[in-house]
Image 1 (cartoon, rainbow, N blue to C red):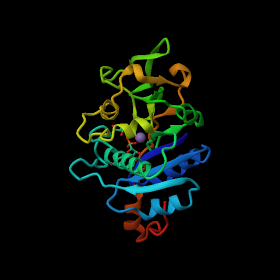
Image 2 (image 1 turned 180 degrees about the vertical axis):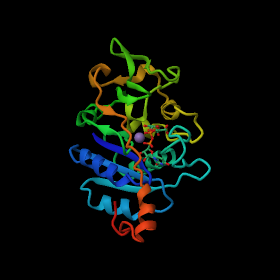
Image 3 (image 1 turned 120 degrees about the vertical axis):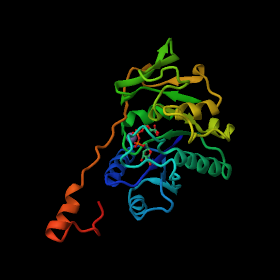
Image 4 (image 1 turned 30 degrees about the vertical axis):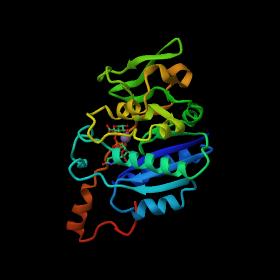
Amino acid sequence: PVIYLITPTHSRSEQKADLVRLSHTLLHVPNIHWVIVEDTAVKTRLVTNFLRTCGLNYTHLNVATPPEVKMKSTDPNWLKPRGVLQRNAGLEWIRSTSKRKKLEPAVVYFADDDNTYSLQIFEEMRWTKKVSVWPVGLVGALRYESPIVVKGQVTGWLTYWRPQRPFAMDMAGFAVNLRLILSHPSAQFSITAPRGYQESSLLSGLGISLIDLEPKAENCTKVLVWHTRTEKTRLKNEEKMRQQFGKGTDLDIEV
Ligand code: UGA
Ligand code: MN
């Protein structure tokens, strides 16, 4: 099966560094198609040029988050939904592409651009029948969050924050078989879902219940993906340098 990896990405100082690092992981993964969706009204030169030379099979899309729901860089990171319309655009692209050709075995995974992925997690998800699940490291202010597995079946969620959510796991903790996505054409993420309910909005739309979940990573005993976050770089000396020396860094040099 091919893995369709949907990655929302937004412009920021660290964007290229994060994308380079992620692409270097993906270059080690066989049979993967990267659906990268920019949170912009027009595709940026930075991402366009980066993708051209990245060496991966990819599709480049864009859709801007409307201003009334868009995060400001000063907002706390949990205030607004991130990457919602972008993931939906990725899903729509996969659905419409699949209509135009013979159905191939495939799995869909949603990958933030700043997480850390082991190569093993891609081989675990590749054989997903409906929805597979596994632990995610460094998330929810815990060492890890995980599905609770009893006798090979998911019975609940090991998480501090709202364990009563229908699917109380991070975006990095599950993958979906393409057939299930195609058989539920209106299943998608919701821009109005309350904080922490994105994953539940998609999975509920796919008509899934706990019994359907396939635990991976040795019955959810191994952490193979980490919800790392890139530290915001302070650029306070850019302006100071321009003021004091009359000349700053070369803005024609892409970072
Ligand atoms: C966590 C989860 O890992 C995300 O999958 C989930 O979307 C998010 O919470 C949420 O609650 O909405 P976190 O690390 O806190 O993610 O958020 P980011 O990494 O900043 O954003 C998630 C993805 O959306 C990234 O790939 C990022 O580039 C993208 N994004 C972020 C946008 O496309 N637009 C934005 O304005 C912000
Ligand atoms: Mn992140």
